[in-house]
Amino acid sequence: MRFPDTLSPDLAMNGSNPVVPRPTNEPVLTYAPGTPERAALKRELAAQAAQVVDIPLLIGGREVRTGDTFDVVMPHEHGHVIARAHRAGPKEVDAAARAALEARSDWSRTPWEERAAVFMRAADILAGPLRQTLNAATMLGQSKTAFQTEIDAACETADFFRFNSHFSEIVDGMQPVSERGIWNHADHRPLEGFVYAISPFNFTAIGANLSGAPAIMGNTVVWKPAHSAILAGYHIMRLFEAAGLPPGVVNFIAGDAGMITADLLARPTLAGVHFTGSTTVFNGIWKTIGERIGSYRGYPRIVGETGGKDFIVAHPSAEVAALRTAIVRGSFEYQGQKCSAASRAYIPKSVWTQLERDLIEETASLTVGDPRDFRNFMGAVIDRRSFEKITGYIEQARTSADAKVLVGGQADASKGWFIRPTILQALRPDYTTMCEEIFGPVMTVYVYDDKDWAKTLELVDRTSPYALTGSVFARDRVAILEAIAALRDSAGNFYVNDKPTGAVVGQQPFGGARHSGTNDKAGSVLNLLRWVSARSIKENFVPPTDYRYPFMEAE
Ligand code: NAD
Picture 1 (cartoon, rainbow, N blue to C red):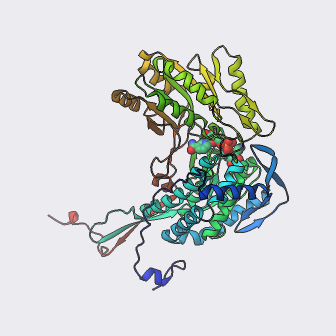
Picture 2: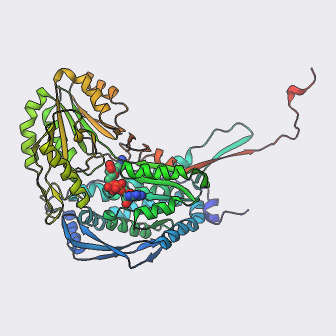
Picture 3: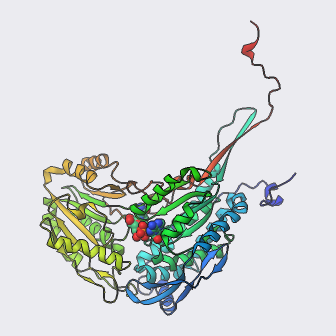
């Protein structure tokens, strides 16, 4: 008997049928004064801030340095360089695509449980010895507070790896029925070609998942991280290596996004795109693939999670303190740079009269500054481009007859890209900042007449082209049911009496529809199914030996 060369005879013959340990979410550490994690993180922050990391391209397991570099700075101290990253040129992009295809042969035939073991090991190394390395890189490079970093870089990343390992077992177990005499079997093959993963700046975990999810299903990947998240991305690559991911399974390249993307989308071997970022960029990718559709070996899988204009809608029965806290945390944590961040709220007059003063005072009291000072609730926005875009919306509101600035609006770019948390009041429900994604610490409130609850739900649904997250605040059960029904298509992640941010892997699979993406639910089995192309195999134990059927016999 011959065995496939990636499966040792011992393993194949012992009849093992492995079961992935049931995943649970990585516990979130508090970083409260006196805790060991706080001391360890502070040490690591000081050490990393004192270095300038040289970040190579990682192609086929090799470090590649082109000498054409760009500086990576801290958004909260933009004069401080923490890394220099090498840019890929056309030669390196070609090498990365080739390395992925070369690695595919072995990796695609590696048994699912062996692939899962690599990712489970990565989760445990991350949760243990590498936790503060990745946390510090995320805090410094992306300007996140200790808590925002912990829930992203440490916990969500480990959760993606552990839950995806469990989900890959579920996919393998999705087998068809068989009638007597035959045995049917589903072979969950990885896609034929390479997968191109393109990640945004705002979550370290998203980069890990965009590259890791296709890889756990046996695909090989070319991963282009966002420039401003490249330091954390580089540590993810080191983590993959430490966990035993074979060279070439994930290839890491930075550089001109347009050039890299044009090159990779032009290859007949492109098998899929795993994207998270803005709607405009995703639309461009989809269009290019559409124009070239006849040139690919197969139909590339296109998975994209994109923009949002996430809402909070309050009913007259809403609990005011809970609503206030949800607006503050949901709109301003991580400077409003979460795709799920609340950025428009609909409040009935009767609630607004109880809420307005406290909400303004609480927002004015929020601390903004360098996240290495743990007293700060917010850091800086990611870069100059974002700073200018966000302050542009605030300036427009100052001079508009249709809006007023209730609190915040101050911005200071002298040391870092700092913008105070800002609440605008829109005097018309279709004012610009009620409709467009701003991606910064700006919340716009629209106050409605209590009697217009049903009309307001329609307004929430109609006002923006997105459908990512949203929440309803009400004590009245009927109102909750009305909102759930009226807003069924308005959000892919919907919350009742909770802020619309903070989805947890395995608990609230994440993604939106309409212009918010393909809704393939990161952190669920639905996403992993996009990275396989099943083959149905039928074995006939006693095949027929005569072509004639009984109906053909003489009466
Ligand atoms: P972005 O679209 O500017 O960049 C995302 C990625 O695309 C980066 O790697 C970037 O280099 C690359 N890119 C930029 N121009 C490109 C081009 N012409 N061709 C190919 N690639 C290109 O987004 P961002 O600023 O990094 O992230 C913020 C956006 O991401 C927001 O719109 C936010 O809503 C969205 N987002 C969505 C989700 C979700 O799950 N729906 C999660 C996080 C972020």
